[in-house]
Image (cartoon, rainbow, N blue to C red; front, side, top):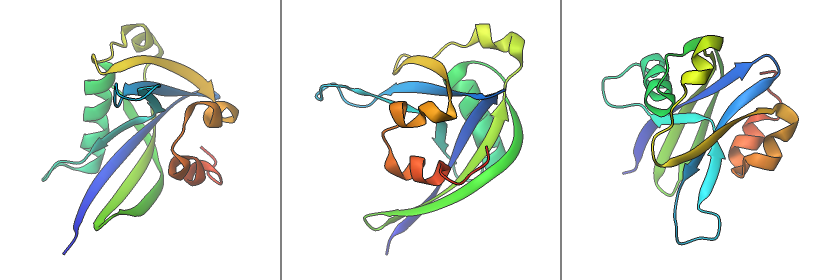
Length: 134
């Protein structure tokens, strides 16, 4: 029998730009970092909305706000079923200068939607974003 887990993604938007963070994945490969949105697994008993706000606080050291649910996704990883909810989020402008990333994150950058393919390597994420209005 397989497992199912729930992930949430916080797509932080400011005008026509989106916040991407660079996460360390493996120092045994030439480029050990990947660009991604705020992303976390929902822990048992936690509401998805709470999880995405927790992730924003843990990864950016700031308080964020959920604007809306943008889309859901589902995929299989072997016998594990991953179900996800992507939120459009915002952060107060005055909080931007207070962003502090954990050690396993290299940097962050505000990018336009047209720049997503230059940063995001995960083809599943890019496909999910194709027909979304964001």
